[in-house]
Image (cartoon, rainbow, N blue to C red):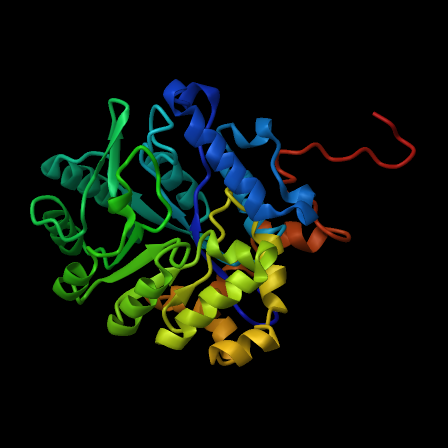
Length: 364
């Protein structure tokens, strides 16, 4: 928690970027992903940057959990299963492994399923299996599928694939659908990551909630316009939230534009851990205010305590039918709370994968 605010991280995903899972033809994409990690962390927070060996690994779920609940003031997080994104041989975050870890810590994690095939019936079958086998809280989609060295884009308003898949999701009880947009994943066509396919499904599936993941990283004004017109659309601020640390004036423009369009009730904090460590961005946001000259030139209003509360947790709790009091009660004395309580002084980042320093006077 921050003060009395329950904090929900709306997107986390331990990457499996181990050498065994890397596609040799995906080197450029893998290097771009690591560069994104370093840029999002910033040079002033070098201790939060993962080394190449740490990053290009089958990243432990335990290390992500530690980054959230021990090293940062996060109370609850949503694991997004990730399909093959062109630079891996298999899933980037495998649904079954994610489900096992979620089940080990059900008071700390929610789980979003994913699908990994453009064949409609097969994709529906994958989703049905995950719902029945694991129980899930939502569906994570990428607007492209990667195979045979290429990327095939698809649209969320497509009648042959997307509409039947969303109908199946609704029939299975899923009410939250998160779609990766704005940030291009090559070699898929760039058009797949635009926002011109959202209006129809937002209207057709008015009883479901949709999230633009990486909202505002591109197409800001289209994002704001959609948020203003569709109350079942949410901006999940993975990647963008790091701007509070490394590009605070850009963060002001993005957040201010969205607040102006729809208020704070449709915006959600997300770190994307292990892509970014949550602690620096949450510390920055806790004291963040729009600069005076930005307020004067833009017409934005200043961010308020109510805005912070909604963005950091209340909106995500509402989407998933949870309340802050229950989350507090269920996590108050678990193993993560105890580990945080036993810490003396600042908690080291990524401590689950980094050796404990030897005590002074006891060289190793």
